[in-house]
Length: 171
Image (cartoon, rainbow, N blue to C red):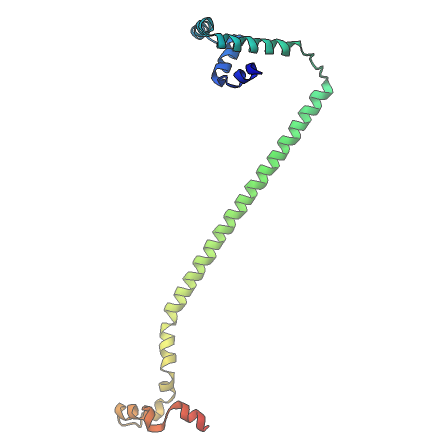
């Protein structure tokens, strides 16, 4: 029980170095450093021994025999998965493309609407002035007989004829 607690505290870098040592993957200098540490450190030796025993147990396990059918089905499954991934990637590209076109269309529509509103406002200004002056234009024949503008302004005073509310009440 105590030994398994010690194993939990092994450093992953130490284990990786020892595995590389057991597999013969270290260069001469690194191998010399590991061997020096093995000579000096009991815990490091114990860790090497446990890893070596684990590798030995793995080698004692029976190997599974794989036939051609297993290989074909595995390759077929990988091919199906790759095809599904390719389809998903294509759908994703199409969605991004559609979204890009939709955003571009929205920008064009908004810009066009703003341009239309600005042009209409700018071009309608003379028409709005004419519409504001329409009562005068409609009665221009009558106004020709008026002697002065001051007399017309006196007629515009509400106390002369009463408020518009009084006129509405009278009607």
